Amino acid sequence: MSGKTQDRRLRALRIVDRVPGICPREFARMMWPHSAGWRRATHAGKERRKVRGGGMWLAGGSLLATLHRAHLLRRVVHEGTRYGYQLSARGAQVIARGSHAVR
Image (cartoon, rainbow, N blue to C red; front, side):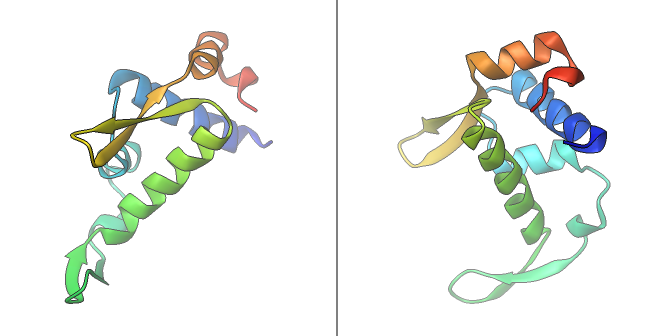
């Protein structure tokens, strides 16, 4: 795994550690706050309305799901329907060891 990927994963784990139960949209805002994707408009929903930054929360959810599949995060449910992510024990170990341990 490249150093850039390791750094990105470690940064993502640190964000989730600071905000337990974070949802994909909040995560994307913290992970990529200055991305041009937040200014892009996409069509979304049943009525196909334009939404700014619609692709960003999908990118955030994709990275969170990747970390979940690697057993670095746990999925938690809020209010019965909304979900978020928390650091798993393995994710906490990775943060404690630093960037050389992210695999």
